[in-house]
Length: 507
Image 1: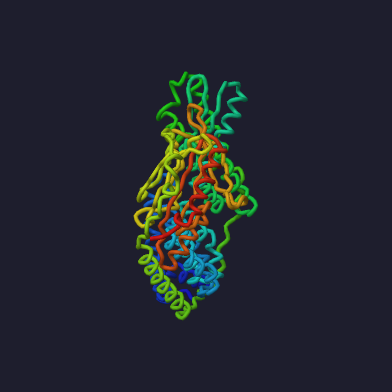
Image 2 (image 1 turned 90 degrees about the vertical axis):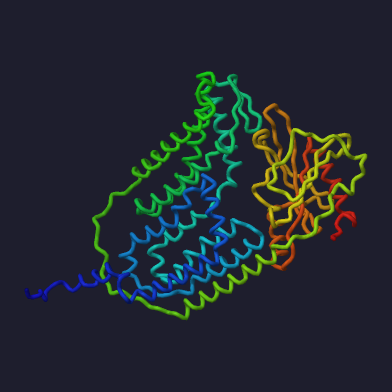
């Protein structure tokens, strides 16, 4: 049968595009991509291992396993538009590549996992940008940004979400006339006592709603204003819903005399409520959804693929050099420094007293820990000095707790002035127990003979020491007192003892 020579010629590039990645012209791009992904994996190996541990061990971040595969699937959905766009490597991506490399090295030096994870999942889309070029990257901008949801961040919001949930639920309980007494995060009604614990903060709802809301807005909404509005709703709606959830649990317990909504009941209720919240959120999205216009075919154009091996080789060399830098930093940070002289050696034994045993901090595997009661102005405060070699453990860590959340709850933040500099403040918290006891707790760090009141400053100084090849070990000092006045007096006494010459000598 004779071929029809009158077939529309505009259909021919479509066949090429549909078979784009099978075309031999794309093989150099495939090889370049494979090289970049291998180098990215080697360079970010430590960040990938630690982030997988968090995804697996923390239910808040279980969604992390699906983010990068989901992002690549979103890119696959845009394959026709992508292949109709000129592909040319761009060095403009270096504005993200170089800071990501540097941030990752800082994260390795200071063992700052947030930096490592942020750099890992910023570097990956940046390398894709470099390979495809700026014009092609615009087509898949959201999928590349979507990869940032892989970073396990958000637990820092837990204390604030707990307070919001407690404030909102108490307001609703008062509105419905239910008698209650509140002490910190403890809410007591005649039938029993409730604690707005970390599991009740709704942080899982919040993060999941943000991820789902962003994805829904990209797939189903066209207007930028509607997308932004829906993402904002996905942030506010779970907070309000969690307030209603906490209120509902206490209300059910009040009505049923604690027969229901106690123990595991409220967890089951929480999961059903979370599913209901997501359905409601998607329902709001459907109400905001515009009418879909008639689909129009993508304008056909020949594939434009520009292979620039020099640019790709330069980025590959940069990754290799950065990987060697990471190995060097890891080698130098594995050394253990000398142990600081305990702060109690500068105090006389007449200043010791019987410490308050109902309070103690929760610290993650300190190398050594010493605790004493210190009497100042007739009031006994508890002082804890924990030493971390920062090799088998971590000095500055979000896992350290100034109090046990099973016994105490946070009431508010406080600050205590340093004796030498009234402008510099040592941060702390006011805490309350279920029985109504009040304690004031403050902490600071001792690193290389220097005192740091800020977590960030202490961590940055450790990074500075690590980059110089010096040990990053140090001590954590925590003070607990029944009043803020006695806390301030005890902190002043300790700071003065540390200023003595013998207190800061090194072995």
